[in-house]
Length: 169
Image (cartoon, rainbow, N blue to C red; front, side, top):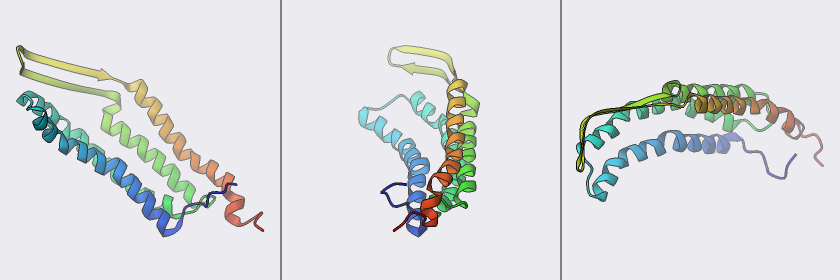
């Protein structure tokens, strides 16, 4: 179907594993743990802002915890070639797991941050709570994740002849 050789085998499994590991675990952890150093380099941040960064830790922990199934599922997805029927269930499971991870990390699109007795420069705030309801955006993202999982079925039918060697000279 295409000039590009389908990825698969051990090299494909390692490549897809590393991509998933970097995107879902390494980058979020690097950003989270580098924030205090960035604040120090900028000239320091009030302790209240540091507390807000620490309030993000449960979200990061949840992201890492629910990313582990994605990393594990990425191995067979990368191992099996395009057009192989065995790749389809792993793709579907990956899409569902990605949707579940997003749902768990964002708490269904309802997130809130609160700050008490904060002093930001010359302004003093006794208490503030910010609630964000982005559930519509999360629902669209969940739909995209599930559709990406169903992409495995399309990939199976599109590359089936190439996988079986039909049409090769």
